[in-house]
Length: 300
Image 1 (cartoon, rainbow, N blue to C red):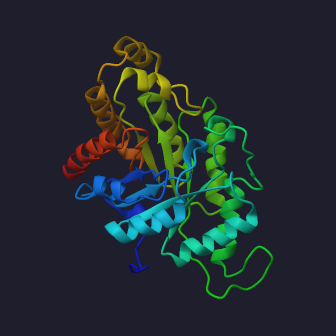
Image 2: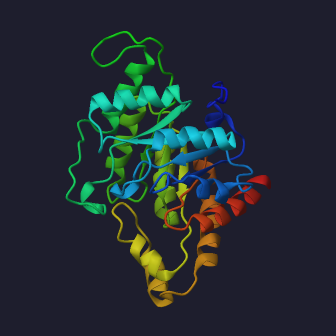
């Protein structure tokens, strides 16, 4: 196992924006094809964000996959942990297991609703939300479990959260972010943004809270894919862009989105600590965007 003395303080002190790449675990146990796709393509990447059955669609467990990917590439994994699928007993057990496997940072998530997934008849747990999970992490970090028992070896997680600049009520989202900060959040990963002015307005306000934000950037391949993304809860594309995408249909618009993401990266730079490249359904396009962002960061 790799050493455990990584300095997460770089999130607050780096002079250049940091790069974080989202990686989805496989729908199965074969991790080789994901590792092969990433081999030699992670230059400049500081973190790998591992999703936890995102959009309520089952995939290999995030914590062990985060440990595997950290060992393979020597890059710290920011592992999502969802309250949707676990009660507090399981959350504590998984947090202890993740630490034993070398995971050092988790992203506390409430979790997507089961109804948007591919098995909407399943039941979510939601015993606590992301704030409750942050309190749980803090308790384990202090050397005790939630029942007050002393732990034989404690965790020391560096916890993160998610934030959504796309919401219709920015004031409420900023209030939630402040509450997460007060509960121990040390950084935030944002949902992918497409509307520059709206996102910048939000990020300016969020910067005052003091939680460093990796702004989410997502490149899409076709107009049809962009229209589908616009229907995902929590995401927003400007009306003018939607009209462009409707006209584009199944045509390749990847160059448009790469350029748009680079423009957003430059505009948001004063207000964020880095860029969170969201893979979505187009991991190869995400790697292309990652390369372009790495070149941009090198010029700063």
